[in-house]
Image (tube, rainbow, N blue to C red):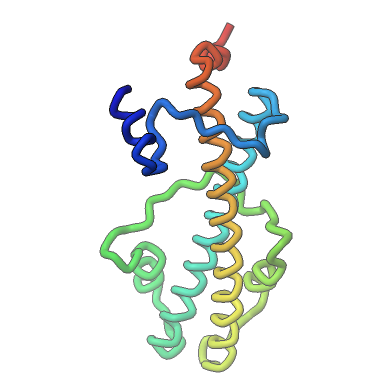
Length: 173
């Protein structure tokens, strides 16, 4: 603990494990409300990540159609959708249903119902541009979610550090 005080006294501004990180924006929430808020953020992050994976998969398919002159075999489709580009396969599990809408990005819904001629390079490029724009929006939204999630998690941890008995309230009965 003496090292922690010395670090702060030297003006480094670093937090230590014993420094609670309470958010003034979340101060009005009860512990159960904070937990519920954090869970909502995690659920929304799952949903946005799912849509991002769909966008990336659609981009991969369109890109493969361009490279293969519009002919995409089942084996090639399996390879395109299974490869991450880094030699690893996609294994993430989604806890959401594909029918969940994402209202901020209506272009995504039209991307799944819009038929694209695999031999029309211009149509494919246009679709890819729209998907890339949607991916940028999704990434920005996801980043904001992560910031809020980090803030809520920090506040929750800070509350537990101030009163460790609060952590017991999540245990059943």
